[in-house]
Amino acid sequence: MSMNIGMSGLIATSEQMNSISHNIANVGTAGYKSSRTEFQDIYAPEFGGGEMNGVEVAAIRQSFKNGTTTPTGRNGDLAINGEGFFMVENKGQQMFTRNGVFNLDKDGNLVASDGSHLQGYGVSGTGQIQTGTITDLTVETGDMPARSSTKVNMEVNLDANSPAIDPKTPFDPEDPSTFTSSATTTVYDSLGAEHEVTQYYVKTADNTWNVNYVVDGDKANVQKTTLAFDDKGKLTTNSSFDLAFTPNNGSANQTIKFDAAETTQFGKEFAITKNSQDGHAPGQVAGWYFEGDGRVFARYSNGQTKVQGQVSLARFPNQEGLQQAGNTRWTQSFSSGAALVGAAGTGQLGNVRTGMYENSNVDLSSEMVNLMSAQSNYQANAKTIKVAQEMTQILFQNL
Image (cartoon, rainbow, N blue to C red; front, top):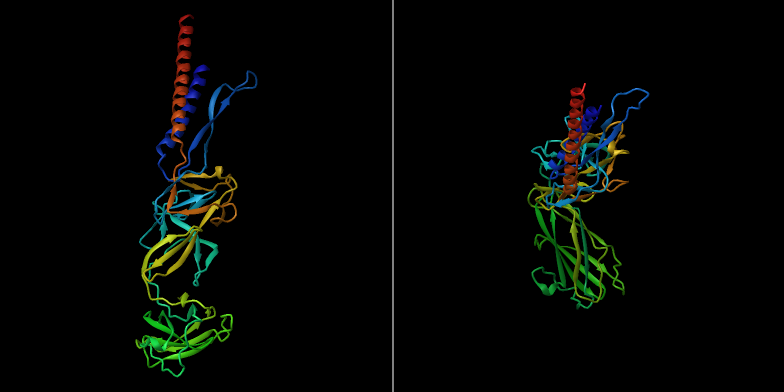
């Protein structure tokens, strides 16, 4: 009986040594979660059957406590600050992980080191996140086509203290004495070519200004509108002007709406507070990056960005019920319950931190102490077997 009890102790302690050794071996593994061995006693009462006393392993329980994070500055590294798992798929099997180190493969797929595809929400043709469907996250590798400019938002302050210029004075963009101030906007045609539109502001009387529009320095095609202000410097006339022109490079005829709704006339120097337009040149993919809400963007050589999708996170009613799948992956089980999926920062899901990854949550100091304790337990159980064997030999010798 004593030998059997000691043997149960050796077997159980060997399992504990396996868990401790596994933890120590993975102290540097990103997203790894430590485990501990839990024991329970085996007791066979004198009456009621059973021939075995001792100990056995009750469970190998994992700790899902968050690990520390290591900043890397790398676009593809993510860490979850709080509850949740990244979702990855490999050969049709969905798995979950805290290892947020991802790369872009040759086909534009966001993948883990083993080729598993990062899962998330895709985008519609208009660039809207499609939160209803989980799919592989990809980054477009094709060029971004040009977009012709259709609107310019121009916000300036015209200096009310400027002297008026005689309305009979012919306007000449090359003669600064014929205009008061100017501002230039770069716009794009349907082929992505740039054009310079300069607005020349001419004060003709108190609270009254002419605006002359010149495209690419073409003095032969000057278009004009008038702006009027009240005695508080607020615009009182129509705030928009449609500028029509025909590029000379074969692109389509173009009309651009210039919006001057926020233009003011105060008694201070001329200043441009906003000068934006909605067109751009064609561009090639120059990189990609994650935002803090899990959205992934492609960055183009023309300075534009375009959303490609959004990382989805999953949590479980009982995460300790997850089934280990290796490579710091888990799969859901009956015990864990079904995955509850959502975007980062929603519900009880944690936020995504970019440019860093989560370290193993193994406490090496504690594991070394546990290792010494397990070694002592193993030696003690081995000693009980040896003593039981010696006692048996004594018994046989005296029969």
